[in-house]
Amino acid sequence: MKLHLAPEIAMLLRFRVTNHKSIRDTAELVFTKSSFEGVRPKDGDWGSVTNRVIGIFGPNASGKTTLLDAMDFAVKAISDSAKWSERESFPFAPFRLDKESRRETSAYEIDFTVKGTRHVYGFECDSGGIASEWLHSFPEGRRRLLFERDGPEPNAVTFSRSLKGENTRISHLMGRYNLYLSTASMANHAYLRRIHHYLTRHLPYAAFSEYYKQTRIMSVKKWIEDKEALQHAQSLLRFADLGIYRLSLEEVEIDEKTQSTLRRAMKAVLDKGDDEEKLFANFLEEQRKVISFWHKGSPAEDPHNLGLSEESSGTVAWLSLALPALREIKYGGALLVDELDSSLHPRLASALIAMFKSPEVNPLGAQLVFTSHGTSLMGHLAGDGLDREEMWFSEKSPEGVTEIYPLTDFPVKKDHNVERRYLGGRYGAVPTLAWEELLASLQMETQA
Image (cartoon, rainbow, N blue to C red):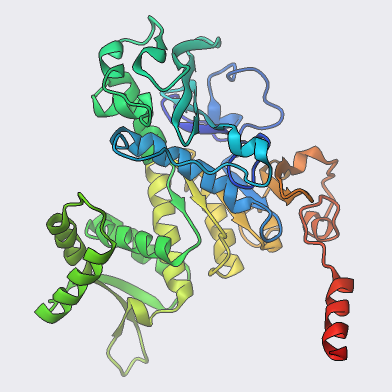
């Protein structure tokens, strides 16, 4: 079924990054279909020319996560850099395996639509601050400058007459570590605040780490205070056939001794200038909220509940990913997920993909970007599986440089088994196992 979206729906069209960790040369992830040409669709329907899902496959340490990390870094800089004036340096993570890259700037650029109009926003930076920054739009199909910046100082920004607002005044609030877009949003610039809102509120990142999983669970606790969100969470758990029929959020008391221990632990990790009392109060409020999972036993027994720590990692992983996914589907956005299949059964991982691909479930055209080792996700376990347009690969060169490329770079026929051909090395991005080196090492150990 062809997806037609209202023109005001925001869409992610492209992300480009240069000189970020293992990505030395420019890497680009494209959401528009390969058949799309020009700067906008003739009928203005971005849904018909844009993919809902992008899956990035590749071996360990190939740079899949680095690409999502670069997107997340750009979002955090846009979100928070207006508050970075007191920092000693700007966050900077260049490619470190050659001297030239360590001296060059890093660059990040996002191509997206807001209110049906295509925009391109980007910036360059190093540890000394912002080297350049730009925002262009395409209201009539032609590129239009909104602002450009060619240095860290306030007078380095040039504004277009098309950008209404107190632009020059706001630029004088900006320092070398502050992005103008971030500063303008904090100053309530009407137009730029809308751009800032999309880039910082609708590109959430679900990283593969215990810390980020716990952060997502904390968000889930807040969301299910709302009855509708709680119903959605329960429906997702029942849908996954996890034996859970109800979810509840309860408050428990924390004794003084435990509070004292928690306060000491928090104080040890806080930075100078942090509002200790406010942060501790928020943390304590969070710890009081406890999620309970209710299971049905045999007909003769009453239902029993399990706490979060007693549930399987798969149940927690499903809840911490599926509910954020449903929120993006409801409001329209792009969810970034690292190692989608790390704790999920392949059918659940595939079902999550199918949710984004379904016009009935996802009428606003929310998008999913994920990394995975699970080649089964290339197939058809649930829904329609991944199309050739939706598969990308990451590979690292002998020099340690990450390369990102799409399956559409290769001739693929309808009857091709993409999973089998990928595992056979037809598209690259598979590990090369050095058996000879391993055997030689074992022989040396035996001789010793």
